[in-house]
Image 1 (tube, rainbow, N blue to C red):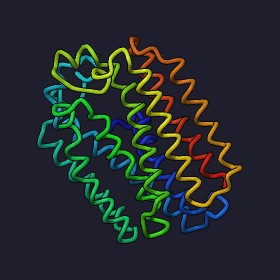
Image 2 (cartoon, one colour):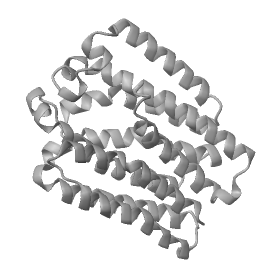
Image 3 (cartoon, rainbow, N blue to C red):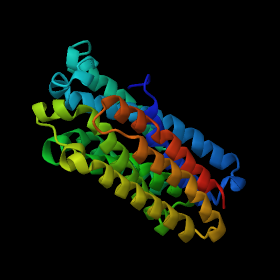
Image 4 (cartoon, helix red, strand yellow):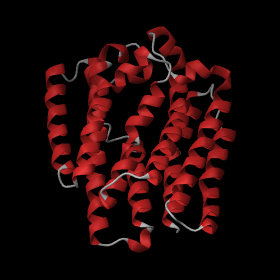
Length: 275
C-alpha cells in the first residue's frame, strides 16, 4: 500500500478537498456535513491509493524486476504471492465500496466509474507514450466526487477543476518518470519523460500553466470574487520554483521536486478556501 510513502495519498486526496471546498463556497461554509465528507475522503484516499499500488504491482511484477528502484517490491521479489496480492486487493476494494456507499448516488456512480481506470492504468505504459495523462484522468476523479458529494451534481466549475488536476498530474508525473529513464528504455516502458526528452522542462511548464488557468477558471465560474483570484499567485510561484529547481538528469532532483507537489496541492486548496 506504500503507507511509508504518503505522497501518493496526498496527491489523490487533495483534488477531493478542492472539489469539496469549491462546492461549499469556501471554508467559512463548512459544517458537520462537510467535515464528515472530508473524513470519508481521507479514509477513501488511503484505501484506494493502496488498492492502486497493489493493482500496479500485480500487473508490473515482471517489469519491476528490471527497474532498480522497484526491484524490492513484494510481488516483484516474491515476498508476497500473486494469490495473496489478489486477496488483499479484493479486501481493499470492499472497504472502499463501504466508504463509497456513504455518499449520494452521483458520487457513487463517479466512484464506480473510476474502477476500470484504476485496474487498467498500469497497462498504459506498455501501450502509449502518455501513461501520465491516463494517471491524471484516474487520480483527479476526487475533484468531481468532492464537488458532487456536496452538490449532488457535476457542473462547469467541477469539470474545470478536474481538467486542472489532469494537467497538474501530467506535470508532476513527467517529473517523477525522469527517475527511471534508463531502466524504462531497457524494459520497453513508455512515458512522457522519454517522449519529451530534453524538452521536458518546457512541456512541464506548459502543463502547469494550463493547470493554473483551469483551476482559476473553476474559481471564477463558481461565482467567487475576482479580487480573490490574486491568491492563485501562491501555486504559480511554487510551480515556477519547481521548473527552476528541477534537474531532469538527476534522479534525486526529480524525486524531490515530485514530492514537493503536495505543497502545490495545499496552496491550490488555500486559494480555493478564499472566496
